[in-house]
Image (tube, rainbow, N blue to C red; front, side, top):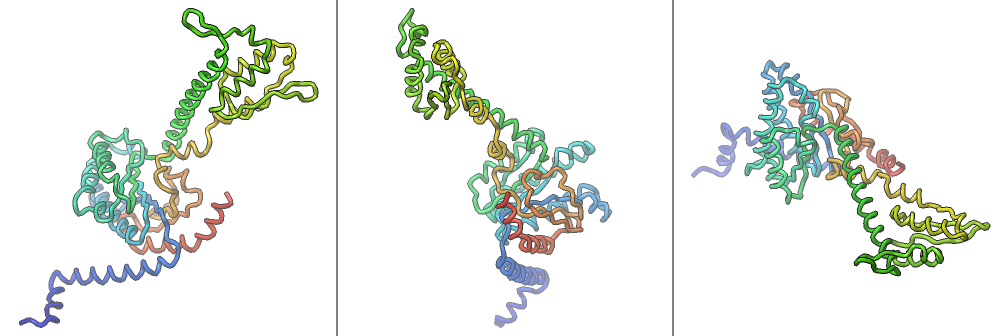
Length: 379
């Protein structure tokens, strides 16, 4: 009978030595993460994965092998992030500017991307291991059909995962994101205005014609008769539009009759009110106050309108931005979202990045966290 102690030794004999070192490394990493957890842990970390081609050249490898090494480094970094409790991770995988590279390199990257995207749905993938919801962020219409279809499938399959989030920026630049958001905001605002005007015009017409007469099966209003009592009709019009809120009232100030508006309304209704008031001698000096300003306010595109149409609206702003290879350029990445985000630039190339670079970035974040939070509240 083999003693239990020898069984334990045998467990780590030969290839089992790797398992022993793996267990020790995992234990030490757990201790380190518990130490880091004493301070604030970032909610969202973003990465610019820079240096794959330089790494391949440095190691005398083929260019495509550098990107494959970069993917392995990404998997390791994602493991560390999710083990530490970082919920959101964003990676800059492929810029719109990258389409300007040599066609054969772009084609090779698309093939590699397709392979890795499909691998995310495998049973033992990191997505299933940590319950990750995956978003592909960017102008996905620029991707090849197979890659786009695979990305959409991954987003659909992982839609119910809620433990962690991975945002992969492909066919992305921040300028494209901002332009897209402004365009969508304009379309949305135009539709809202059109619906409001249609609704208010209908309400106004119904109020105006309710005392009208029926001619050839159509209801029309006898404008001439209504003009004899413009003020009374104005009040009835406002009362009929209670669903749109109180819109204002007439009052005299220093011999001048003014209309005080508290809510914007359709141009058609404006014309009815001003026409009636001017066609009676009593209201020839009426001034419409606030209508133009309120109309502009309702048609203006506000900050919240732009932000809710951003590609990155599905995640909070990053707490840390890490760019490998020592570069400090943002390269058109998350320009809108990184106003109060510290940039950490380790000198290592992306395939060389590891646990210690992430740890130093988090320590630096903890050192400046209170200051940055104070600046955010002041803005």
